[in-house]
Amino acid sequence: MIRFGVIGAGRIGKVHSATIDVNPKAKLAYITDAMPQAASDLAAKYGAKVASVDEIMKAKDVDAVLIGSPTGFHAEQIQAASNAGKSIMCEKPVSMKVSTIEETLKVVDKNKSTLMIGFNRRFDPNFAELEKIIRRGDIGAVEMCTVISRDPSPPPAEYVKGSGGIFADMMIHDFDMARFLVGEEFVVVSALGAALVDKAIGEAGDADTAAVQMQTASSKIAVITNSRRATYGYDQRMEVHGSKGMVHAKNIHNTTVEVLSDKGYRADPIQNFFLERYGAAYANELNAFITAVETGNRDPKPNGFDGLQAQKLAEAATQSWKTGKPVKVA
Image (cartoon, rainbow, N blue to C red):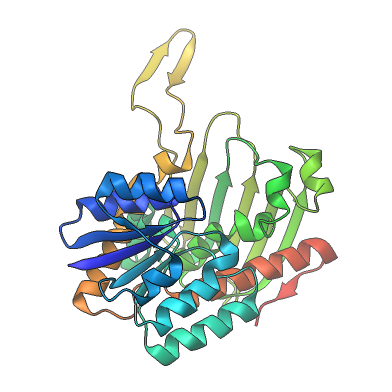
C-alpha cells in the first residue's frame, strides 16, 4: 500500500486525490494547502488528515509525496521530499529556471529518489497509441511532427505575470510531446509570438499566440502552434509524418453523433476543458506512478530529465521570440 501526502488541494490536487482513492494499491494519508479550508474539505472527503508540508515530509506513514502546489514551490518541495526518502510525483514544471532544475536533480540523483514529472499528455490513450505506432515503425522514419494546442479562452492578464510566459506555462506540454513522439532531442529553436487575443497580456510582457519550429541534430523537424483562444473548444491535435506514411490524433467531441442533411454536415462541439479532455490521462499517469513505486522502478517516465529538457526548450523559445533569432539548445 503506497501512502500519499498530497501538497495542494486545488483542481489538480482534487483530481489526483480521486485517483488515489480508487486505486487499491494506494491510500490518501495527508493533505496540505495554503488555504486551510480547502485542505480540510478534501481531507474529510477521503478520510485523510490535514498536515503541514513539513509534517508530511517527516511522516513515517507517507511513502510518496504528490506535489500540486504553485510552480515556485516545486523545486524546494522535490528536494525536501527526496531528502526525506519519499517517492515524488510533481506537476510540471520542476522550475521556471533550468539552473534550479539542474540543482534539484542533483539532490534526487544523490538520494536515488523516484521522481516522476506530470506531463500527463503522454498518458492520454490517443497520444499514447500514436507514439506506439511510431515506435513500431508503421510510418517509417519520422520526418516531421506537428502539434496544435489552443485553449478555449485566455487566462487573466494578471495570471501571466507569474506564469513564466506562454512558452513555459502552456507550450511546455507540447515541447515534451514533440520529444516524446520524435524520439530525439531538439538542438535549435525558432519562435514567434504576438498578443492577438488580449492586448493586456502583451502589456504584461507575454504572448497569447505563438509558433515554434525546432530541429534535431539528424534534421527532423517539429512545428508547434499555440493560441489562448479557440471559440470552438479545447483544440488538441497532433500529427507525425514519416517516410512510409502519416499518423494523427484528432479532437474529441462531446458525442460521436453527426447530422448530415441538405443544410450540411454537423457534429457535436469538441470538449471544452482540460480536466475533461485529459481526465483519463491524469488517472493513467498517477496509476503508472503508483505501479512504479510499488514495483521499485526508480526511473518512471517522464522523469526529471524530461522536465529539464522541456524547460530548456521553453527558455530557448522565449529567448528566440524576444531576440527574433534562432537559439541553439545545449
